Image 1 (cartoon, rainbow, N blue to C red):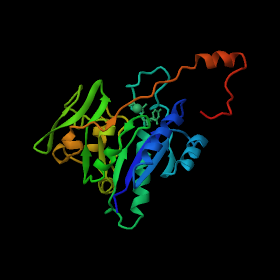
Image 2: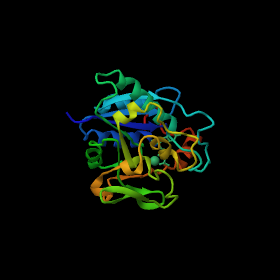
Image 3: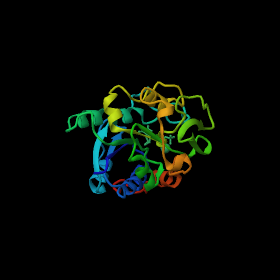
Image 4: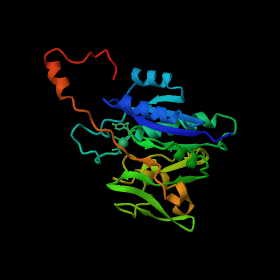
Length: 258
Ligand code: UDP
Ligand code: MN
């Protein structure tokens, strides 16, 4: 039996949410033995996400955890000001630990944990690369950090440093999309989580620091020479005409889900 890949996805309500989640869910449909953990940044589960998951054909768990008010990015704040999706990823980890430890095998279970934001682009191959993760596996991420790609640099089969445009001295200067962790490591380190108060750029490090050393990282994607995941971002749609029509009482039917 293939090790299950548990994918934790934070998501929040916005105009492109259904489009992003549709694209993501249809990618995951092509991945065998995948369990999608969707964590809504909301005080309750929404109908839109509930319906999408029911119809998705995927194995999933639907959770919610609102970002506390002082952590939430406000309209007009620059996007780098506060890390996004932190409390949601931690809620996904909490659920995994609670649910999985109650399963046969306890802490000693095969499986892989991956954090997949809802707007990135994932090749199917990256899931087969990460499936053999023993502790923490790593690979390049395209279109991130103001670079064509960031990646771990591999020499003699080991990660020796990181190719990144900014503060390469961070413990793990990698994007969320560039690593996966074994379920066993997540279960046997119950305190490991993302620190929303970590300085900018240190979120990934806050989780990985206690789990693994650079020397132990398992390079995937042909010794980190292939880009198989991209940090794409969905453009915010313009609503100028919608608003103009709304002002005349002729806006789009709010009963039509977009
Ligand atoms: N996210 C969230 N709440 C927010 C903003 C973002 O749950 O208030 C989620 C979002 O859906 C995504 C992840 O957190 O899955 C990362 O956010 P985003 O893609 O906006 O970050 P960036 O692309 O700028 O790194
Ligand atoms: Mn994103």
